[in-house]
Amino acid sequence: MMSRMIASDLAARLGRQAEAVCRHYLPAGRKTGRYWIVGDVHNSPGRSMFVRLVGPESGKGAAGNWQDAKTGEYGDLLDLVRIRCGLHEFRDVANEASRFLGQPHPEPVVRSPASHRPDATSDLGTAARRLFRMSHNLGGSLAETYLCNRGLSVLTGLPALRFHPRCFYRPEDGGLTEQWPALIAAVTDLKGRQTGTHRTWLARDGSGKAPLDPPRRAMGDLLGHGVRFGAPRDVLAAGEGIESVLSVREALPGLPSLAALSAGHLAAVLLPQGLQRLYIICDRDPAGEGASDRLAARAFESGIEPVLLMPTFGDFNDDLQRLGPVALRELLLDQLHPMDRLRFLPD
Image (tube, rainbow, N blue to C red):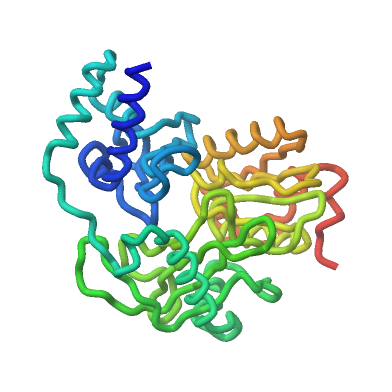
């Protein structure tokens, strides 16, 4: 009992310094919004594992909770310390955590006065909705040019996507803030309420992404939610990136779809009531394949039939650009459930 109490207290204290813990034990990762993203708990490069940096001290969604979309591993920061340091005895783990907590650590960069208030999560959601409202319609914008350059042409009826001509970009190293055009996407929950906003900064002529590292970021509450294209009834398609999901929509415009924005978030997508079949839009990389397997297992356990859609190349936007829309449609039709092969085709 005493060990559990000590463990809970240490995990909570580590959670209050979650960003400092990640910078120390997972230096190969980077901060992205409210998460620290890294390849795995062993500090490999990549984007499969995410650590919450903001949240309550305990329970679901607590600061310091982490999950690996590829392997399904999860835990808190005390587990992270144990694994990273190769420790087995609780006494040794507690000593290492106490040693870390006893050292001075630089405070994370405060982006605005709101970022340290108890209602910071709410403030992020408010800022996300404000940014989306301030953005312009997609039609005729540089964001439309960018998507067209990715081989996408079915761009009508996309209320989740907008364009901002001068979206602020703040470097993670504290450098000068810049302004770049950006594709803006609304992240919504199962009830259609906007919980966050995703930004893809663009080159000033719309020819590609801006030369920034990283060129994409999200703000607000993403976990379980996504960028939605169409309203599902009994069938939904879910994938990672906006461009990959839009590529499937290019071939099957009637198929309701969702972009979860990362492998970790794809594995955690919340599934709507009444869903009978879930198409999982896969990416051909270890993180994407792991996330797809995790989501398929969750769907199966919920009584939903999972169907994996596999691209020929890295993702379906690669397929669209390299194979063309006709070949992509044939590739997808071969993988659809027989009942859906005519259902989602264009009129």
